Image (cartoon, rainbow over all chains, first blue to last red; front, side, top):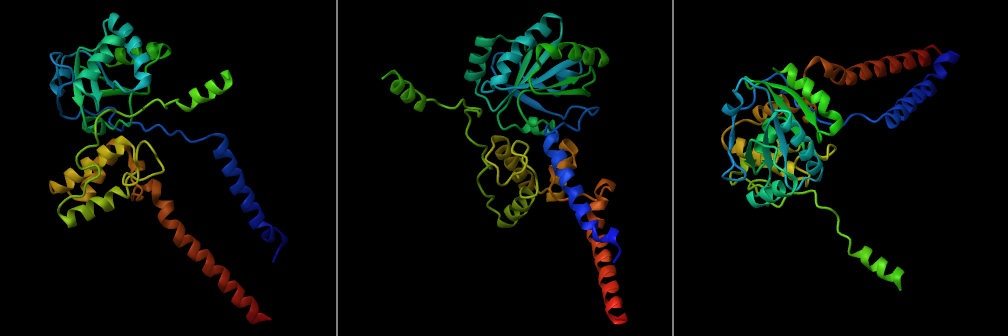
Length: 175
Length: 136
């Protein structure tokens, strides 16, 4: 056996170790992005999360204007700070609808009382059914939906003040 | 004394809940009455990734979203859908990543071909060794 081949297993081992070290140093991205960008919203009709505030259904997105569909919950801590940013967006004329995941009307009402209410409509998704149909994997998440009901952009995690320019740009692109 | 009080207070610290106040979905932890349907649902749930605890299957995970997904799977299977239909519905939304069973799309061909390639390499090595021994 030639000398080079004798060292092949060692070289292979080194390659494997290097690959493992590289993966440990730069962990893979574990956020789950929805594959529905560019696709129409799933057909849904949710009950009102906080009556008498309006409920939410697919037809509400065929307005000709882009809207933000925000997935939130009263039990979600990052959602508290996100609501303030959403309020700012609302003041700039952005239309925002909400989906309350696994929530009770009294909890959503208390959450909105305490933190403010940027939503035009809020649908209740008590068993995360619409969340799953949207390809969303957590709270909070936001979808930018264009005037024809096509999903244009998914934002994973809370929209922070630093995300606002990007969100406004995506809204403009969806126009 | 203060230190003791502080330590005692620490013992009372509660973790911040990150779960909702609602009970699990109806079919999250309940078997379907039809044993065959339940078996089909179960085999699918064991092959679909939980989106929260990503190294666990939907069947193993205690995450609320996993419970809601089990509910969804059982409802669809009970309504007559096949496990493959439910799987592709989920893959449409979350990508083929969500299924532990590798798909047949080109990206996973190396995965299917690797055992074959290894077998060939092994056969080649054995054959060479036999030849070498025969020559001696």
